[in-house]
Amino acid sequence: MPRYKLTVEYDGTPYVGWQRQDNGHSVQGAIETAIHAMTGERVSLRAAGRTDAGVHAYGQICHVDLVRDWKPETVTNAVNAHLVVAQERIVILEAEKVPETFDARFSATKRHYLYRMIARHPPIAIEAMRAWHVKKPIDHEAMHAAAQMLVGHHDFTTFRSVRCQARNPNRTMDSITVTRSGELVEIRASAQSFLHNQIRSFAGTLKLVGEGRWSPDDVRQALDARDRSRCGPVAPPCGLYFMSVDYGDTSKLLRFEEEEDL
Image (tube, rainbow, N blue to C red):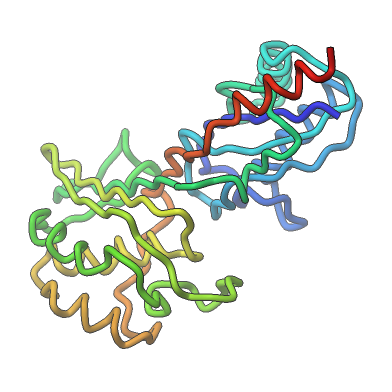
């Protein structure tokens, strides 16, 4: 069965999250419904990461196996057409044929997330549900310095949800940066994998540093405590974006498999 890698963009506001659930409309469910409308097949998507309710994505990756050997551009255009008809806030940016060995989750070598804050006293209108509104002035340079306490391999028990299902709290953060442009403060984090609520926990904690309520050393102590109660407030989901996923080069393997079929 041909396997397709899908790059997906979505506004997470109206969804219960990526994963198909019984309690509401999910991104996964919407795409699977659109694929069924296109192909008549009942499929199950596997994604690189499961975003929570209200979290957005510019470059979520998933894969799907289809019975028929469709052209990738046909998959992109047809699925998007059904998503538009259903008035979903989801777009397939690209469909790509990949080898059967490709797995959207397990083949990933690095994931990239963004958290956005708007720091100003007046409420936000255009950015509502797209960023965390922070009323107090915040020092992004202090936040960046504190964020470096989180880079490297650590036990991140303090910064993961009590509902996190990962067996191991240890993760390696490759990079965490905090930058500012006018009112917009952005936290960018990259790692092979993340724990449940880890980025939102980082963002809420770093906000305390930006407001002058915590120091970088406080962040280090919270990390070393390995105690969820030592975490700062968990930032709201509206500011979080799943940006992109890195994979090894699958193109050579795909060409080899196609040649063997000739």
